[in-house]
Length: 66
Image (cartoon, rainbow, N blue to C red; front, side, top):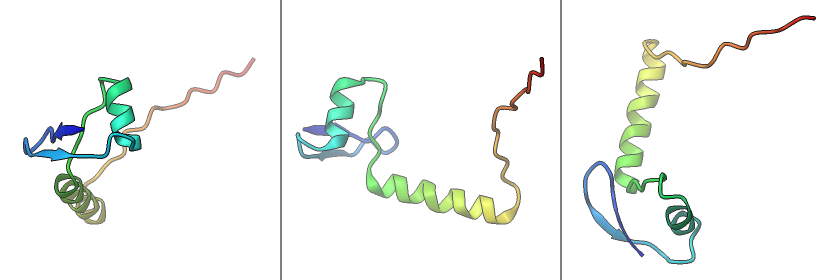
């Protein structure tokens, strides 16, 4: 299966029976990102977390007491 990275527009070939290919076929909302872009984003995210300027925006859970 031929796929295109959403960030760098590089075209790669992945195995048709792989889990990633199945997700892309069955759920069109999923996008493909090449390994180089994924590693670059991971490295930059870890650097931002270690700098202390990174916030996790998690939903606040409201506890309802009856």
